[in-house]
Length: 491
Ligand SMILES: Nc1nc2c(ncn2[C@@H]2O[C@H](COP(=O)(O)OP(=O)(O)O)[C@@H](O)[C@H]2O)c(=O)[nH]1
Ligand SMILES: [Mg+2]
Image: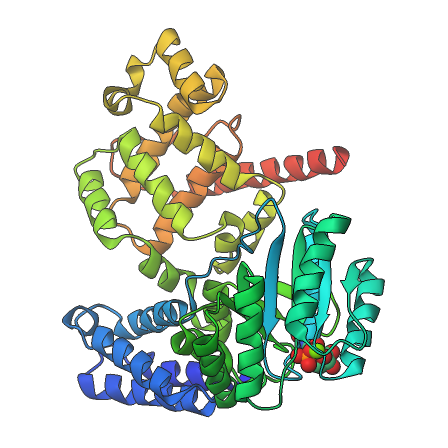
């Protein structure tokens, strides 16, 4: 999917990388290549112009050029603008408890009938009772096609052979749905090879008389500019609620995926990724942007961290740590920051040489652990966070109730906190990589509340010696093996 767009964009961003300091001139040059890559992917020109304009404005901002690594920041900016270009998305089908009508429209061959079946399948999965309606009366074969799909899925299909008026068919279908107890009606309407006024008028009539709750435009992802132009016309005739972009499993160039929201004002809700009826996925702008940028290759973890970590918050924490301060409040902030990076296991897998760490965390509910920790700290008073030694039995019980955990878990957190704080203080002023290692140590403590964290030297400001670190590592490895064994035994 989008290989050439990916290559073009990564190539453009690569010209910016490794240059260290960037000037306005080579920044503009790199962004010019971004523009070319987008145009070659058949992204609509106004969209490209607007997009590159926004990226340029941000990239030439004083902060970026004067930052340590401007090229990394530009990647971040492009990523964010891509996300904004495609999102935000609300995936809800806005189903009411009573009969809900969803209407699909689009050009002929865009994938309406197939998508109708895919939605039916999805609705059935969500324990709704859909009725698919053959409102495409242009071709008798279209009615038959929907019946075949309905049969495959075990879903009711409504049609009126010989009928001439699609509006009447849709109205009759809604009545029929109520009669037989179907609660979602999906209308498969007719398409044309090109937009024409007769088709639009027909759709407007259905919209007016049947009043669907949601109207979705089905767009063939293989078509670039053309798709966008028709999307515009559909949106002007009908208030669209979302777009379903099909055929992204083919060699779609990316033009439609990047242009549609800009042009219609409505986001892509779902994407079709195959002819089979289960090939329908929710559309996630964030993931799509990552895919388009080939993020796995371009972005290292450190780069991601720079985008997602709140820089000011980091600076503040750093300052406090230098002064030797680290309270449960700081810890709470840090948990929040770490969470922004994404799933712990994934973070670990991206760190060079951290493969075995990932293995250790395999099957361990690190995310859940972090959430519980956060919840416990949230239930403490500011005083308790500053001076955890004040937490006696009755306070412990109160905090546990507030956080929905057992009192002993509060106790464990407080006990773990001291060695953690020591590690934190040692790491103050260290680079990003060390900080990740530090988090990894924290993570180990979090994910396994019973693990006794090795008590690090406190207050000397010295790092652990290499022998001490080796010992810690051995312990961790042993622990991992034990956990793996336990997991196997536990099935
Ligand atoms: N590869 C692929 N083919 C699709 C997808 N959606 C639909 N198709 C195919 O596109 C063609 C036209 O689909 P159809 O549902 O009949 O389009 P309609 O004329 O808009 O109703 C059919 O051959 C479908 O199998 C998809 O997501 N991926
Ligand atoms: Mg059809």
